[in-house]
Length: 279
Ligand SMILES: [Cu+2]
Image 1 (cartoon, rainbow, N blue to C red):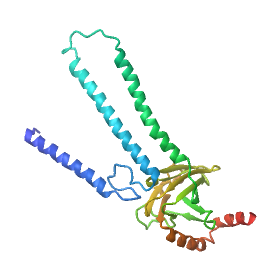
Image 2: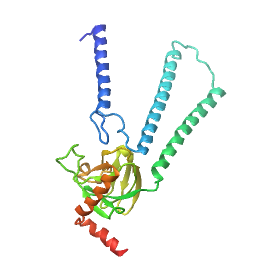
Image 3: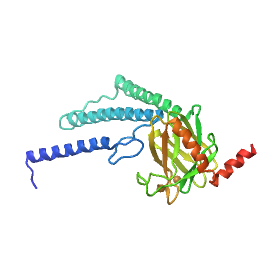
Image 4: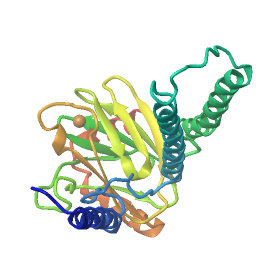
């Protein structure tokens, strides 16, 4: 099939419009705390650590775009100006001190420019501030258990709820945390290695049997935040979502009172109360 220039132009214009519409939809569908259809960016941030991860991601993306375009431009110059036809007698130059110093120093400076914010982010993630509350997260085949040692030592299981939305992310018992409070997560695995991850909080940490790993987040927005187990842990790996409900202080206090009674008969709590009796 032969197309006229006008037809090709119209097709290209159509493609461009479709592309722009797709990008606009990606932005329009973005929802706090969960993935969205056609999303191509990081999830919207809900914590200071994720703010910095997002900034660092955008910074690197900008930097790598500039570097890639620069290298592409150099390649084009070489191909066009120095091919055998347009440059039949090649130069015999082998050294140029200025260029050699520049192509050593400039990449070093770029790497230092990346290293500084990179290490700052790493320290922010790993250096856990004084926590307002601790939640112990245990990964099990195939669900999560949450224990609140600072709020009455209750523990409960959180399982996928088939009838809840968003699909495959809704659970029967959500983890509940207060807004703008520093939450320390201590995590371990009861059987195999799992990984506790909530993208909007910028956390992902392995839950390893026999080890206690730590991370932290400070949720800055009220609402529902979802994550998934991020370590292949067996046949139902895809069906052990993480749902975190961020509420204000009064709602959190009220929930703790209800949870203490509701989960009092949970067999997991016999261990917690046995621990309390032994103290
Ligand atoms: Cu898992």
